[in-house]
Length: 228
Image 1 (cartoon, rainbow, N blue to C red):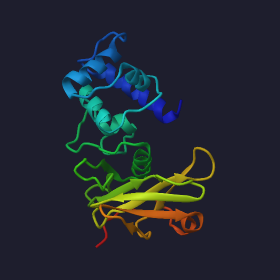
Image 2 (cartoon, one colour):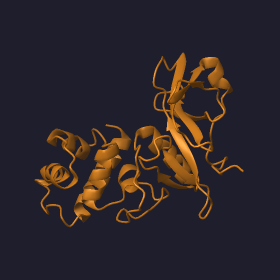
Image 3 (tube, rainbow, N blue to C red):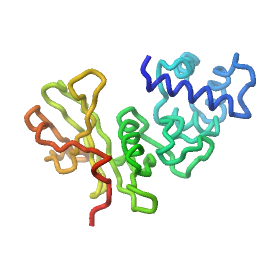
Image 4 (tube, helix red, strand yellow):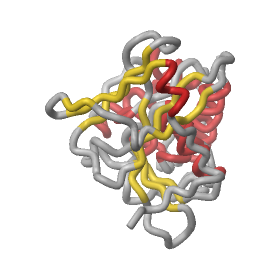
């Protein structure tokens, strides 16, 4: 069981304890989640899936995460990440914006930015070419950020990243890749990397040699400010 998944299970337990609509007895709560997601949110998941969430074996993504947070009356960012530095510290304060791409790489970058003092929000699904918005400090203009993982090829040889279109011109494009040792990752700044257009999307392909020339992104040293 990973720490990321087990921490989510703890937050799910806390949210159930605080939810006034959830059964007071522990027994039956997971069945209640399954039924309420279907009846109130229109989201169909199996009871086995809900058990995996509660046991720290898996984490809901995308629409399932959003629906679960809304059902329990907690903030989606808090439920997904549990970081007070990311957008809102109170789990029962729900912002207007709805997080979309709540996958591990996006959460990893959001956590790094939050720890660096940035104000971070997840992009809505109406922005398919953006994962996050980050402002280096309160009141500063946020910058769109697209977080990518390699999607094809042997990570030790070739790494390919897909950039959807449209992506705003000022988007900071970051790639999360393994950094040698198991469980370690680094964030590459792919914003200026050469792209190949394919009609509707573009790709960035890195070999081991070209990857070494790509700058590393360090949120604590480089603030995501909007240029111009």
